[in-house]
Length: 228
Image (cartoon, rainbow, N blue to C red; front, side, top):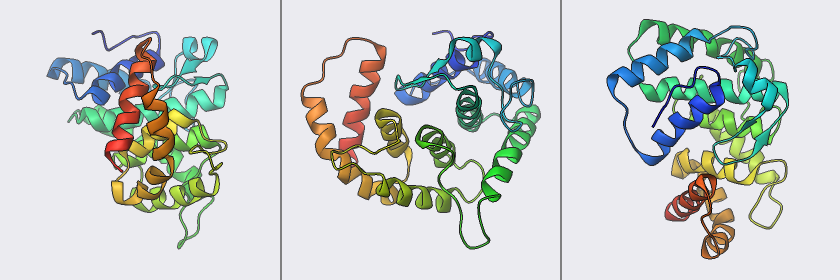
């Protein structure tokens, strides 16, 4: 499977996330090539707060998240892909100095944005909207940024307040939120996993796989239920 798509960060990250999600591996050459390409996009035109930047094509046609939800807002595209790209650099686990430096610079602006709304004793686990917050959580879940565990714990307290009583959450895209929950430490996410489990079971029982996104969602529902 082709990983690097030089004209679009979104498609490159989708291919990378497919590898991570399915537990597959990349060769050292592939990891190095993609990590270097991501690093080269840090802070260029279109970057959100100095993060790794989408390409002009990403902004032109919009993007879809790994779980299929569409994103058209320029700011959301910049922020979400920035979080996803930082997460990818961590998971690529490369030792390239240029990649480590890019990640450090990419995180700087986002940390500043979070800290502007925090106090020394109270961290922030919610950012902008539900979709952007879920992207932030995915980055935090792999140890990104600072105080990741505290911020995730604070964020899930916010998520609880947005329960709609059906197994979903207001403002939060359902499947992308499930994706984040599937990656957060179980002891931190357990209350929300139990809350959404009955709905996930009903959805899974009537699920019909029709395409790549549907297959990802089916696997995700199974993973959520396995963690309850």
